[in-house]
Amino acid sequence: MLPEQVAGEHILVIEDDASVRTLLEKSLAARGYRVSCCEDGLAGLTALEGTKPDLIIVDIMMPRLDGMTFVKAIKGNGETKPIPVIFLTAKNDPKSMIAGINLGARFYVTKPFVIDDLLSKVQKALV
Image (cartoon, rainbow, N blue to C red; front, side, top):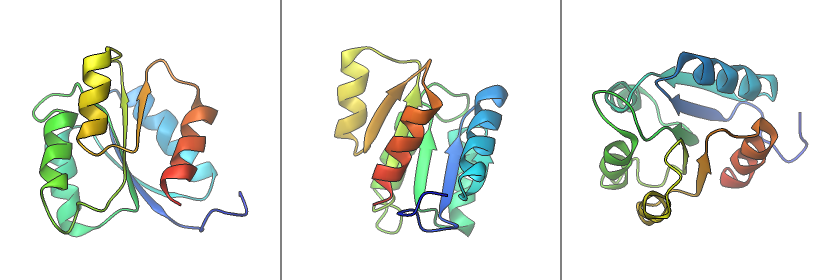
């Protein structure tokens, strides 16, 4: 475990691709984070009713409720607005990147991604 990390910080992962979700869950848990996973933005909003994570990693292109709409919803709510967000997405066009940052995302990571780079951004977003 990294010395500057507070053990047990809670990260909510919202990702519709099961293999990416599993990779994130195992990689984050191996570093001492508590991880909750959801398969789309609607499930993510429901999860936020019961808990307030320290960080949210969210995909953009998902069924039922996409990541941009999800982040608009949480950034418009006083209780969830302060939670840092990292977009993890295949949408790598400049317009989407700018929109994501303008919505309040701390980082915008495009797929395919290097897990160590993402973990470094997670650490920075939690500071």
